[in-house]
Image (cartoon, rainbow, N blue to C red; front, side, top):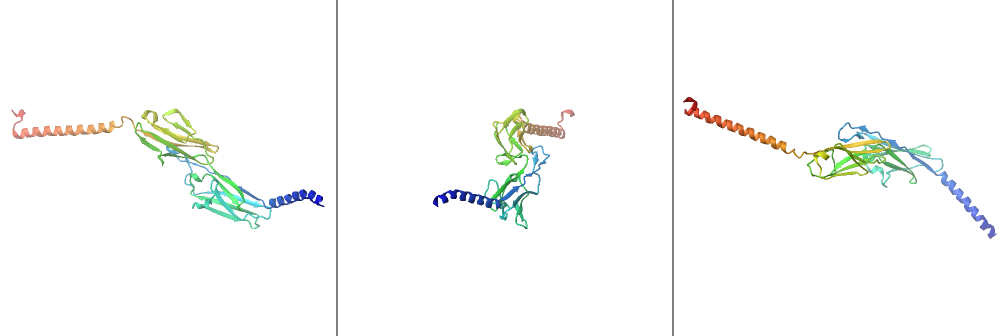
Amino acid sequence: MSIMFACQSPIAAAVLQLLLAAVMSAQHINVTVDDVSVSLKDSGSLTGEKYTLGKLKRLAITCRASSSGVLSPSSFFWRLENSNSSATVDARITVDTKLADNGLSGTSVLNINYPVKSDITNFVCIVNQTASATGRFLSAPLLTMKVDGANEYDVAMWPGESVAILCLVEGNPMGDIRWTKSVDPAFNLTNNNTLYLSSVSYEADRGYITCASKNRYGENTARLFLRVKSPLSFLTPLVAIGCEIVAILVIVVVYELYNKRRRQVVDGDDPKSE
């Protein structure tokens, strides 16, 4: 009898596993999130970012959940891909969730009001705390140039000074980085988000500094004008001041000569009268 039980135990275990798998399959929830492509706008500016988000009022991404079994999609939770916190901790983000009357499906829409560059990223939709899918806002690279921590697109410098220019690349997916200089067509620096220029000179550095980035959704550039002053630029105001001083001196001398002659005429000492 014990021998028969031992023989039947593996069979019973296999049957039990199949039954459990069937139950789990019946309770499986399918979750999908649509990817959203975001179009950029031409800024029309000579400096700064060529293509921008513009003044978008809203971005939206949709999560869909469905079940053919007894487990219904009853709750939706959104978070950033690299965060455990709810996406709605940002006051600009709202979620609109609707469940079907039969309880077998539901949709949840994540809305971002007045989106910024950092919003173009991945969001995770979690249903019933178990099933999940990732959706992506996709765009060409979005660029910001910074000098000393501030957004700068026109920087004035004296010869001999140094500067570090940061090109912050956002958008989704991330793009590469390439630096160029209008004054030096041969200059080409890649794979470095910070450009260091030491001891700048009027001849070698004055002009447009461009950061370019490209991904499979497009290419974008940001330009900064590096306004290196000419070594002789300080002479211009000095010459102007000198000219003004000379002009004043001439006026004073002429005025004094005129007054002297006038006094001589009044006193009868005019040489011409003799």
